[in-house]
Image (cartoon, rainbow, N blue to C red; front, side, top):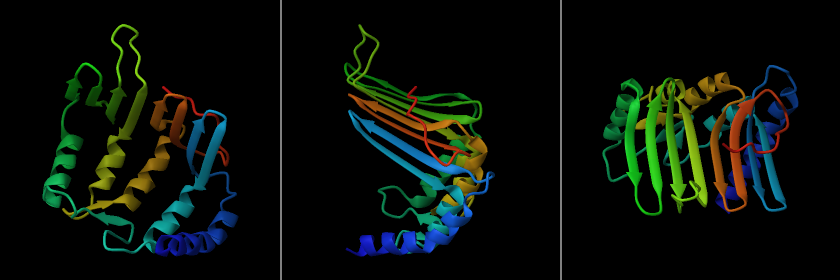
Length: 194
């Protein structure tokens, strides 16, 4: 119930920002999901997301920053690891292949890539589920620009709008597709998939 009240309050507070979001320079965060004949489209102006994030206050999030203290690892070690990835040279860092699944994590140019293929069929070079995350290194750098025990989501959002039109996350899973991207359109197109 508490979460519903928070969400309702955020929507009410965001309405003025939504009204002002008609500016052609506004970037929009899009999430498009297709599952058979069901379609869900979420289109939110980035300035609304940026305005709403500082309003979320709980034990893990404050001022648009996420405190990472519920992991088995020391939060400072997690941030140090992400900073090391940011500063590392290009290459393939993780490559796990077994009979059914493939996971690859690599840094290529200005991006960190995570590719997961579940139920991989070697003969058909196909998978039942594919997840692709394309994280701009510049966004990762902004994310780890705060304290050693937090992720600065606000800083990452500020940088994210520079990656207009690029798919950031795609998921294809047995008839279901998900696409997340940023652009200047106030409506989303059909998921493209990769």
